[in-house]
Length: 367
Image (cartoon, rainbow, N blue to C red):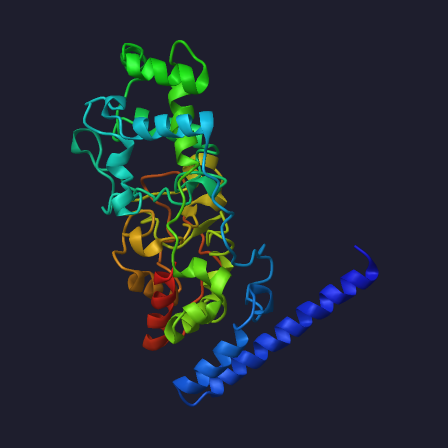
């Protein structure tokens, strides 16, 4: 990068920052909704690059909001693999009871979740976590609330063999599927294998899951038709999301997730339903109570929310963040060697009016 380019870049950032400050002052001084509407329409009337600068904290690796990559429909052998993976996604013989499939907890009609606070698995056992939606799984770096899998293939095997989820036994699954002529033919055509191994099954499942995408919404039309597609309340919510409400510090980029881990004060540390989060994967004391930032695409279809399904509504989520998050205990728990969770510095108590909270919910519903 040349010195001139760096200078222009710096000037651009300063201009954006000053513009954002102007809009904030104007908004504060607006006497009525019409005044606010006028400056919002002006501020967000152009492409994303011209919007007021997002207000992010120092040290945050920021990625601006944007569209998802164009959908590429599989063809030929890729289409065969996807079709096979979808069939396996619905295959109940992958479970120990022969009654549970991946689709049992990740149902398209329920936002690729199950609509329950915590998932129910083998012999009606309940886990302690909410089944995350798979809408954005293909775009994430790590999978599960604690990030214990870094590939979709590894993610696919985990619930199959988990004793309180599908409770499947790989040896029994492999023995059964190799007696099924239709599966043998499909795997031979799609992957060129004569005998099906467990790795082949998880590979097909992953190939299917890579094609899953959030449904197209009003938010997607912003990038083709501009913010005129948003009503006044939704547009105000977008501005609050990127500024005063501080959501953009973690919910950023095309899928609205920084793909990092944060402690929200909801680990129930030292209490019933205690969950130390990413610490169980890394053993790092800094990770106690941290969970992956959930992507927000199609969020109105994927409740209840948080790793434990604690919140049934988007308004509840907004209220949590406005309060500065939950409050975990600070004394050492008797049930774990993990030290008490540390509050995330990105969480701050916010002065949001009822109207502002409603505007945030209205914006989230456009996603």
